Length: 276
Image 1 (cartoon, helix red, strand yellow):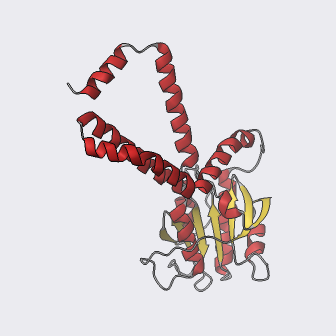
Image 2: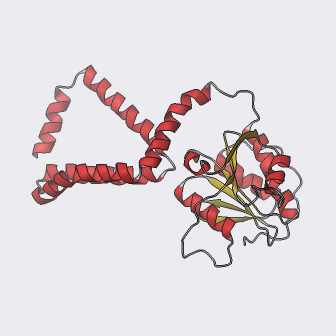
Image 3: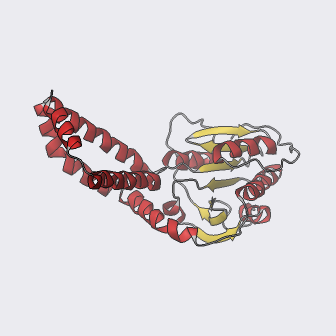
């Protein structure tokens, strides 16, 4: 029996109820950290750090002296590097964790997700019918607070009329994206990171590349209205999915957002589904 296995057996045999409580609280803290960091780049680094930690334990238990020595000397520096590189993501995650309790006691009696979804669907196809470009980002578990900071904060109710007016060519905010979260229009005129992926078609415009860019960095759900073709596309996890009509978009939103399907409305003609 290895030294590590013997140590584990000795620890289990002498464990008390306070040790069990200690482990349970630690597990709760780890779970909470993973929840608030979900959808951020910091989560990927955290998972990588966990893998390094597991390798460290394996090296210690199996007697891999060289690997254990290297990891033992580099581990602290790796943690510091991650804290420096992803300080903004960590700050947003902590702010989101603290804001969760405030949000629970905040707005109430607002429109349901289904009602908000319908307003967004109507706006997208109304804009597509008039060939007015638009980019709407729906916040999910990952916070978009850091990307909203450069836009114009609105905190307004979601409505078809508001979204159409924001993207109208005469609006000073029509070039940026609209961010929706918790059933509200958080901000407009938001400029998002452009994807540098070489796999994207050269025919894609700035809106599509921005939608892919934000969906690569967060779990946000993007809706893009093509100004050239008058079509609607859904972008998630870096993938662009053309949408045929309102029923198609409604079904895809229900699938991705997990909301019970609202009352369907007759499909509208969109003149094609290819994203441009």
